[in-house]
Every structure is written in structure tokens, then in C-alpha cells.
Length: 331
Ligand SMILES: Cc1cc2nc3c(=O)[nH]c(=O)nc-3n(C[C@H](O)[C@H](O)[C@H](O)COP(=O)(O)OP(=O)(O)OC[C@H]3O[C@@H](n4cnc5c(N)ncnc54)[C@H](O)[C@@H]3O)c2cc1C
Image (tube, rainbow, N blue to C red):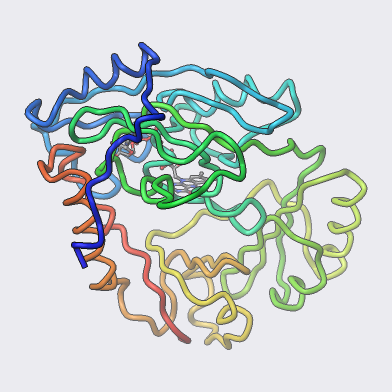
């Protein structure tokens, strides 16, 4: 299997000459420069394992490089906070699908952690937001992955490997993100209702969460459309609330259809929050053994790490596999 995969290096036509990015690559240094880790806003600093204290801490450069409202893309340095990015996009009525996060969270940190958040049903997984990444490899080289336009992928899609890798495969320097229209209206509602029935009656809800008893619904779009959908939800027993529930610790993935057909013992209500239509379950999913990573996936991850960073110098102490999401069957 390993013979089919070769170490990844920059293509000749993708050499980066931006002095800011080159200075960042210099900070990372070559393969003999020892362990190194990038810190963003430190809002999820301990997720994925404790950082090795021997690692040199550096920060990615910050700032918005180019915003193309007509193309709906933005090129931004990885150390930029989401608030700074939003301030540039908002006047054009756009934003990126990275909402509801702490003000100090950075673009690089959010992508490296790779959690999609409760809007995944409507906004898609966070990896779909990333079009192009410029990262520093374990050899200290600037590498470009993906392309700056929406239809860009040929060959290996390295951007998808980088999202959720906790900085263990490459240190993000700059990325190009897909932007989205800013909704003119949005609303959260909650109440006791049958989630499958409500799901079928609504037109493309952006988020629907369920804890076995109560449903939370997020709608966004044009004011008339949101009002019409909200009225439908209210007729099913929901009413306006300020926001979503807090997610309990622990996360696993089940086939989305499981959530439609499951019959729960009332004792399990409130011990989990499930993302309807997505299949991610936060907390304790009844009947499932504790989440454990699939051994084949773990082996593949080790192999990828070995190819990207044979020296073990990028973000040592972090292991994406220690934050497992497993697929499970019916409870
Ligand atoms: C819509 C949405 C909702 C979310 N909701 C939740 C939630 O409810 N609960 C939750 O726990 N999380 C959630 N997340 C994830 C969370 O927001 C991010 O993980 C967090 O804000 C990380 O940002 P940070 O800059 O603080 O990273 P840090 O805490 O500084 O770093 C996190 C990790 O990323 C690495 N890293 C940072 N910058 C870089 C870089 N440039 N290159 C490589 N690696 C880097 C660090 O070394 C570290 O391992 C959500 C994310 C999204 C998009």
C-alpha cells in the first residue's frame, strides 16, 4: 500500500514568492530545526492531545490579502481572527461558513481542528469552505494545495487532508476560502416535536438538532421565506429561542437515516444532541459502545503522518485520532 503513495512536494508552477509567507517558512525552519507548533487564538489548544513543551511556539501571519466578492472567494492569512475576516466581508454582504465562534479563534486554528459546528446541514462540512491552502511542510517548504477557484480540483485533494489534521501534517500560512451571501434574516426555534416529520415539511433548514425530546431549528435566508418556514415550525409546536443548546462532550457519527427511525427509551432523552440530516451525535448515543477509532483509519493516518512529517516535528503531542468519530449502527 505504501508503494502507491509518494512524499508530497511543491509543483514547479506553484512556487510562492510572497515575502510574508517566506518569513513564516523561515520561522518554521528546515527538517533539522526541531519541533514546532503554531498557536492561533488558543480556544481549542488542548484538543487532540497536550502540546509537547519542547515545541517552539510560533504564530501564522495575519491579514486579508484579497477579497473577490464577484468570485465569492477570499484569500486570507491563517493567523487572521474570524472577527477580522468578517469585518472585511460584511460590507459586501458576504461571510464565510465559520460562524458563532469565539472572537479570538483564527482561520488556521478553525481549519486545523476541522469541526464543522451545528450549521453543517445547510452550510456543508468545513472542508468544503477551503479552496486553496499554502502551508509550510516539515522540510520548511511552502507548498500550495488546491486552487483559488471553486472548480479547482485535479489529482489529490490535499486541502481535505489538512482540515482536521491539528497542524500535524503542515502549518497553514495562507488560505483561499469560499464565501457565502450573508442572510438577511435568521432565527432559532425550539420545542417538542417529531424531528423526522418536521424535517420533511421544511425547505432546507440550516440546522436541526434533537435531544430525544426537544427539537432546535435554525432558519436563515430572505425575510419572507424565513417567516413562512418559522410559521410552519410554530404550528408544529416550536417557539423562538436565542440559540442552540450546548453540545455535551463526546462526538460520534451514525447513518443519518438512523436518527429518523430510532425509537428511544425516555431515559436516554437529554443525554445527547443529534444533528438531524447529518448524523453527528454529541454526547451519549444509547446502546453504542464508547467511541473508538476504526483501526484501518488509524493505520492510514499514521501512514499519512509518516509521509508528510517523517521527522515528527510538526505539532508533536497532537493526534487527530485521539478525537475519534466512529460510525455506529442502530442503538
Ligand atoms: C461553525 C463552527 C462551530 C464550531 N463549534 C464548536 C463547538 O461548539 N465546540 C467546539 O469545541 N469547537 C467548535 N468548533 C471548532 C472551534 O471553533 C475551533 O476549533 C477553534 O476556534 C480553533 O481556533 P483557534 O485559533 O483558537 O485555535 P487554537 O486553539 O490556537 O489551536 C487549535 C489547534 O490548531 C492548531 N493550529 C492553529 N493554527 C494553525 C495553523 N496556522 N496551522 C496549523 N495548525 C494550526 C494548533 O496547533 C492546535 O493544535 C466550531 C467550528 C466551526 C467552524
